[in-house]
Image (cartoon, rainbow, N blue to C red; front, side):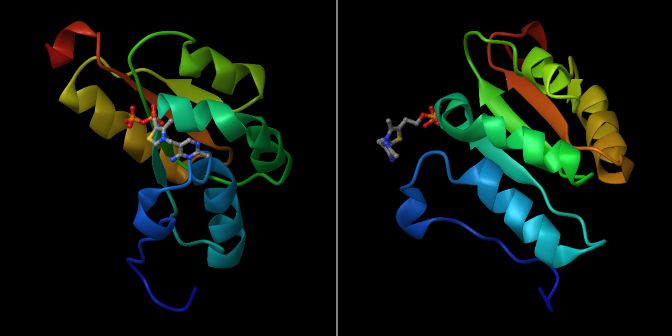
Length: 119
Ligand SMILES: Cc1ncc(C[n+]2csc(CCOP(=O)(O)OP(=O)(O)O)c2C)c(N)n1
């Protein structure tokens, strides 16, 4: 992780479940540099149990999960001991990202397409 502003993705964006565990690995390699992940609800639900490792290792790692239905990712995050945010405006999203970048633990930021601010 010698260069800033790197973007990691699976070939052709093909592999669901890639985001959460790979972000943990990249964050381990990146040290103090900020690392984040954007993932869909289906992909998040394939490997979100790895949040346990991120919390155990005290990895700050903003993850934006884009959801449509349930479950509420914010509650999943909290169940693992991570932080959960579900912003209701662009300002709250900015605040959540700023919080997540300085937090000691991982933060799941849930963007639910059904929420009023996105209609
Ligand atoms: C391991 C795996 N299984 C199945 C697929 C086929 N597939 C491609 S996109 C997709 C749905 C992804 O849903 P989600 O993660 O919620 O993201 P969205 O595209 O809805 O934003 C599926 C099932 C895949 N790419 N990888």
